[in-house]
Image (cartoon, rainbow, N blue to C red; front, side):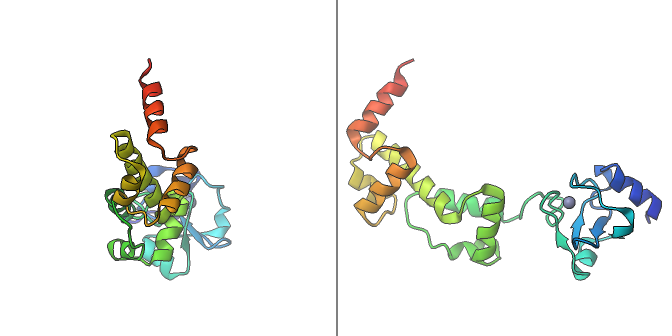
Length: 188
Ligand SMILES: [Zn+2]
């Protein structure tokens, strides 16, 4: 079905999500393409051209919009993002080669870092460190000493583990301290 110019202008002006995916609003002044429902500032009609597909928009030199995430429609984030996060979360007992994430995502590591920053406000390595420290924290709560916890979570040095632990939890990784925290938590 071919949409009329008038219908597309109305859909854009009403931020009508029913038209998302049916056409894209390309803003000539910013070289950004949007979904009709985009909540960013409404462009002037004379500054837009409508494209029926995202591919046409990209081929004409338009870039995706950060606000409406037109680049990923009907998803709202890169399709590989959750898979990469899952791999990081499962690797809580070892050091992870950041470059290996590129193979999973099918995009290069700098692209992965960029989208992590954009959507998760972190980096792959920072998330991985957090996941490993949480695992170490659990191990120590169950009675593991801190060197064992460091080793079991892929930290290469005790001091590196200690520094990272303090940064995340605000106190050093000592068993006594963890027990105190655990018993404090147990008090209703
Ligand atoms: Zn937009």
